[in-house]
Image (cartoon, rainbow, N blue to C red; front, side, top):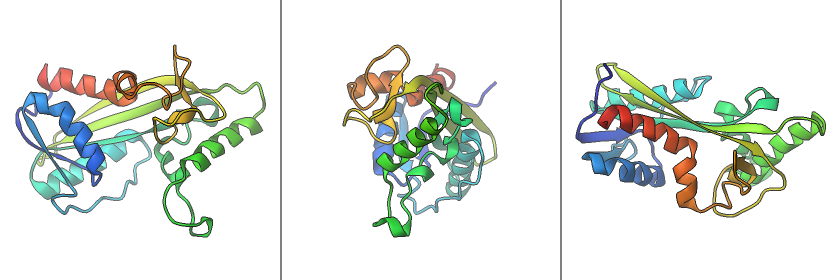
Length: 208
């Protein structure tokens, strides 16, 4: 039987205030108090895994060991079937600007353009199916852990459309829809997204 969190304090393995706020709101109804790894001054571990599951576990286990509390981490990204599942765990890396490209940071239009360029190189008949993935990993200080995987299927479009999303959202059209993730209402996106799928599985097992 899977170990349950119960109420109490949970470390969210992130230094991103927005992600902490989003996850806290989802878990608050279950009596879980969330604090970030950043607020505890915990270092960010190197994400050396080759899968979303591995990277999520690396982050969750590092936070649990360092804090002595249960910890939750997520890892997410886009996989494109025609590109052999890429960018996958390197989803954010494809948006990373190099020093000679100007100010450091992420350029998501560049990343979307890289994906589109690779698809066009494969020819006009190339399939454009893709999926967003989200893995949520819970780790306890004694080494026990649980993993929940979410997925949202769709296709890629070009040029990018919409200003409501982030990352690759402007080129991703979920299956059954006509608008990109950057065009649809954020509440609707959160209802059908890969992260929503993973959280639904977590809540069902942990609090159901």
